[in-house]
Image (cartoon, rainbow over the protein chains, first blue to last red):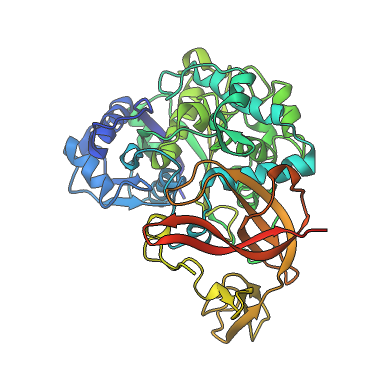
Length: 379
Length: 140
């Protein structure tokens, strides 16, 4: 397998673009990534598009706006992991030597659903019986609070940290700082969560251009190496399962660290899937940033804030930057690439050399999560 | 039981083969038991998710279990009576069931408390009330 590098990134600010089509939301991110890479659109040999709810031919609908057609375009649906899974398909193709330059994009328009909780698959038994994503995470949170003594204040402080970071990100959907009191007194969604414990609904697009390491040298002197690429599906479990341990992330992290020959202590910056406050804490532990039951202390000690030992979600994460489902995976990669290039402005993690992205999701019965994708990058 | 609720679940039956009601209305949850490998699961299915055997039969599940966790849901798709309590109930057969928890003040709920099976009206659609299985705390 060949070494693969990221040579271009782009995204649009996550927001509610009710008046725009999916194609109109998507193309500016793609154009930005191509311009950032310095490639001609004719250099792109294949494209992979992640979208969870964008409908048929999302990639073709976006790319025709820019006249990027006639090449192999593959659309990938894997819930929240759609574009991170698309990135893995692109990575495999380049690493295997099938293509030299490939485009990956993620695009989503959630405002078409008019708001409320994310529409889930109605064929699923638990969904038909009233399972919604905030409640699924809320139930995880309640059990974690019981088992590990996490307080409501500690849980709410995840959102405070997220917004503190997101306020520095011009691509974030919410760029306001929030206080602990504001988080705790917001409208109730699914206990123990108020509105500010939940990622917002919105629209967005992000894109990445990758190339073989050899080809990358033609376009840039600052390629970002893909250190590992991993995607898993959840295990269907008919019996009891520990909802405080996201097994799919634990399993995926072990594989990712082995593949990259990099340990959790070597990670300088991470973007993790904080769809709800409890998620970020669960993933600190699952990714090995701290031991079981120690996540709240890691947060309280400032270790996961910019300036700390392992800054997590400097972009603001899903809670503040936003979570247009299919666009999230590649947007995480955009942030990590900017961090490793030293282009993250006033939210720069100083000296970041190794970055990790983690994107997981999919609410279906019997799974911790349906899919999980972990990537690592280095310079 | 009201079995169609367009707002809630469109064309899919809410309980289907997973709920059996006696003549007096007493509910029983039905799971799957594999005749070959012994796997137990809920809801029932025509094939074993462990060994792929189609030699599967109905498993009458216990009507009592313990509450693994819960959340009070305030925002949900149209059709549900909000707020409602969603929870996971662990049954002695080793299967976990997603269920609404009814007849309880959320402040009274405790982790791992004993709950028992019942039925309840959980929402409504244009055809009338939507009724399904639920669990409720066992009264001392």
